[in-house]
Amino acid sequence: MKHSTLLAGCLISLSAFPVLAESPKPAIEGPPGAGAPPASVITQINLGNAGLLAPFYSDLEYGTVLQRVGQSRSRVNTINNGPRGTPTTGYENSSFTVALPWIFRAPIDETSNFTVKLVGVTANEGTNRISEDAQFGFAAVGYEWFYSPTGMFAVELGYRGTEIDRTTGAFDLRRNNLDFKLSFAQQITDEWGAVGRVVYSPGKTKTDIGTPFGIAHAKMSDYYVYNHFDLIGNYSLSFLPDDWKFHPQLGLTYLTSWSDETTNSLGGRILAAEDRYGSVQAIANFEKQVRPGSFSPVLALGVEHVFKDDLAAYSNEKTYGIVQVGLGYLDASGFATYVGIHHREGFAGQRSSTELTIAGNIRF
Image 1 (cartoon, rainbow, N blue to C red):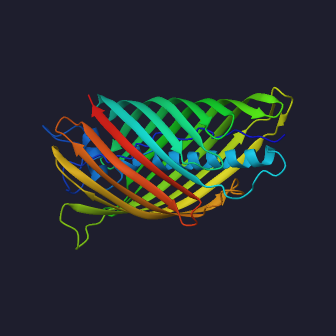
Image 2: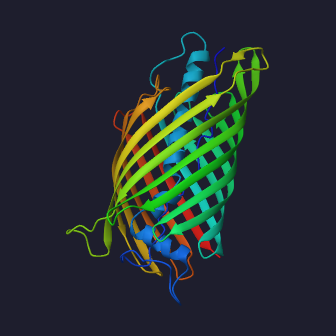
Image 3: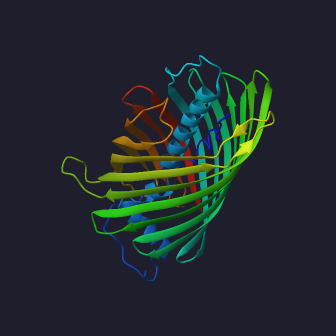
């Protein structure tokens, strides 16, 4: 019996909210003088104006990749381990996710913050041959270092509990895992900057799967390494109003996941597995930069192409269209909130996903 970890992690916090800049002005140099904001705030203003801060805090791409890999793995395992005659075509994925990510930060000194992230997510798949619903909670603590007026670095340690229930058959999954994340944002020139992250996530998974011989219980260890890198531009276009900016975004994502060999309660052997997933994205972001006390609309249009997918046997969607619309608000105290919809539609019609994000960012 061949069976690898199902829906490894499934989703992650989809905190794709913009951190709104105080005003669309040139980079502020440090060190700040008397009465000026602390160095950490100056860096955030500069990175926000450059279009780098929202991608730095967003886990949207991370969650999208984990969800797709989990869905594909579930289909592969179901078909490979199913009875003779199990259909091998007609598997589509259509999901709707609600994410509630909230970040709380407190200054340690002029150049660093302590952060706490709390996330709740629920995901529901549309009716299909295989449909699964998922819920998870995520909590993390982190440290942010603003090492220059145009650069920052962060480290984060998080814990996640995931529950997945199949609505089209006897299947339950419970996964607990840690996330170790390193990330950076750096403005390189007035027009371009970079954002990157690497995540290592070890976990333990329990599954209960219905078979003709009873429920097969299994426990296994699994882990993955996720990498993402963006080049992001910052331009004022002649046809846009003065307070609107255009941020072209070129992204690269690569995930490698492993699961250890084990044996289920019915004696079935579960083989070790190693799977890879890679994609590139090209996104046009349009954002209105506002002062505190104002609303900021956000619009993004783009395309994504998957160049590597070891689990594409039954869900082989290669290219997606991307649409995002949202509205953010920042008040004078530093409280920011964002509500937005993000949709990805596969050009082959096999897979689509929609995420509703209601996010908050609170500074003490």
